[in-house]
Amino acid sequence: MSDGAMSVVMADDHARMRTRVRQALEAGGCVVVGEGASAEEAVALALEHRPDVALLDVHMPGNGITAAREIARTLPGTAVVMLTASGEDDDLFDSLRAGASGYLLKDTEPTQLVDALRGVLDGEGAMSRRLVARIMDEFRSPATPRFSRRSRASARLSAREWEVMELLGEGLSTDEVAQRLFVSPTTVRVHVSGVLRKLRVKDRESAFRLLREG
Image 1 (cartoon, rainbow, N blue to C red):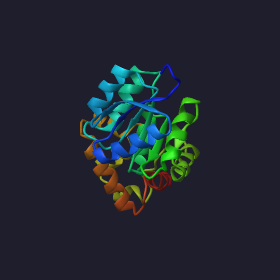
Image 2: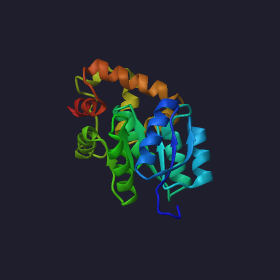
Image 3: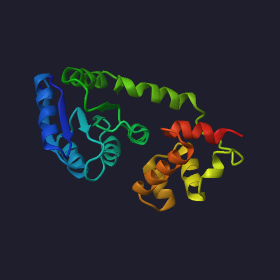
């Protein structure tokens, strides 16, 4: 922008949320140059306006992570930040793998939201505090977890559940696993949920740790 204001394209399928976020951004001196309600609209608006930041919901029609990947690929000068109600590991890690520079929860204070976006443009990552520990756990683990089929945990899984977890453990995103197995991302998530239930753990990283045990 010629006046130095940060330009933002935002996309969320909840109109009330878009209004609240727009007001927060404008109060912080940002200029919202485009507003959409789906992944397709988000990509089109980003290509049209080439904003400083694309602020995207994860769970909107067309999948916000898909939009993040496309915007990051085609517009390297636009920073992608997810603003979502989801604190799920799959959504967090898939967003970062897709090229997002930040992952913020919707309960982020309006002033903190603007500061976080400005930080992204200065080369910082934007992350809700309670998610930082999950990122640290991910990097403390081996890059390619080697699971043991002799583990007691593995005996509880079906062949397809085992296959899904191995691919996720290799670093593939949910979408990439779905493509590899010729199923939908929703099916992959259902399998992961089944694994967590069988292993009696709350998140994917805990399941990985159990499956590594000999």
